[in-house]
Image (tube, rainbow, N blue to C red; front, side, top):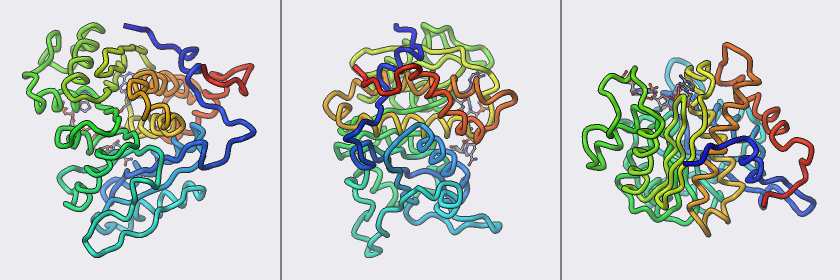
Amino acid sequence: MIRWTLDRAADRFARPDASSDKYRRGVLGLRTGSAAYPGAAVLTAEAAWRTGIGLVRYAPQLDDDPPALGLPSPAAAVLAARPETVFPPRPAGDGSGDAWSTDAADAWLVGSGTDPARRSFAEREAVLRLLASPAPVVLDAGALGLALDAPASAPSVLTPHRGEFLSLWRASGLGVRPSGWAEDRERLPAETALADAALALAERLGRSVLLKGSLSIAATPGGFCAVSGPATPWLATAGTGDVLAGLLGALVATHAEQVRADPELLGPLAASAAVLHDAAAGRAGAPITALDLARAIPGAVSEMIGTNPGAQPA
Ligand SMILES: NC(=O)C1=CN([C@@H]2O[C@H](COP(=O)(O)OP(=O)(O)OC[C@H]3O[C@@H](n4cnc5c(N)ncnc54)[C@H](OP(=O)(O)O)[C@@H]3O)[C@@H](O)[C@H]2O)[C@@H](O)CC1
Ligand SMILES: Nc1ncnc2c1ncn2[C@@H]1O[C@H](COP(=O)(O)OP(=O)(O)O)[C@@H](O)[C@H]1O
């Protein structure tokens, strides 16, 4: 198992150069947030933009509930917070499928701030189509379970916390809980027990896994395994996982071509997202709020790429 560091993350961070333009630098599609959780859409968009990316396209969930209690729709909230964000064409509305073409982005982040129980049939089919296409996909929160329903064709990475990980573990038929994991969730599994479990789930699903927590483990089906942390416990606050998802989405979108060629690269990218997330936390003060954390990402990136911001990754 590799201990992941900011130096390793810096080696894999894509810098723009004179030939860059917004499209070639990486386009991330977001299918995040919902009427129930519009804030998660904002946090994922904020984090993706602040990680450094050419373009973020926001694709609202198909057939989402109408906003209640005077809340803005997730799309309106994203636009108010980040007017740089672009929206894909409107759905055709003829029931024939998803106008958010899989080609609209180089990579996709799906699920943060969504509730699987409220996902429409059309939205589910659309995400399954994404998972059958070649563009890399980050699956978070309410979309994690879809990894069990689709063949592992798109290169993909899942970002469960320990509770979500256990649900995936059980639903994949791997048993009640991994070896070395106590029933009492206050008792943290040892690093090796976390790593063994993450590797086993990655292998079973044929997808990479970033198991989040004080220690975060990035594992791939091919056997890559990296640990980072312990991260600052001030991260234990609502929405920091949404920020991590947006950050990872940006790293994946800016490496989409390389990930298509070698999906194992999702392991190092996931590990890099975890260390950059904690570095941003270190700059966000204490206590941390999720939006402050996202806003601290550029400082963490600058610190990470250090004295040679133009250097190209190896
Ligand atoms: N501003 C926004 O819009 C925000 C939107 N958000 C969105 O809300 C949605 C639902 O997210 P959620 O947090 O309500 O429930 P979820 O993560 O599914 O947990 C379910 C159960 O799992 C457990 N559990 C939880 N954490 C655990 C851990 N570390 N380790 C171990 N177990 C853990 C715990 O159960 P327990 O063990 O306590 O019985 C918990 O009740 C999701 O889409 C998210 O993106 C949030 O990001 C907040 C900000
Ligand atoms: N005690 C802790 N110490 C360090 N990091 C933590 C701790 N608890 C949570 N985190 C980090 O905070 C984030 C929380 O993500 P998640 O549970 O998905 O929250 P949310 O759904 O509210 O965004 C993860 O990146 C996780 O690694």
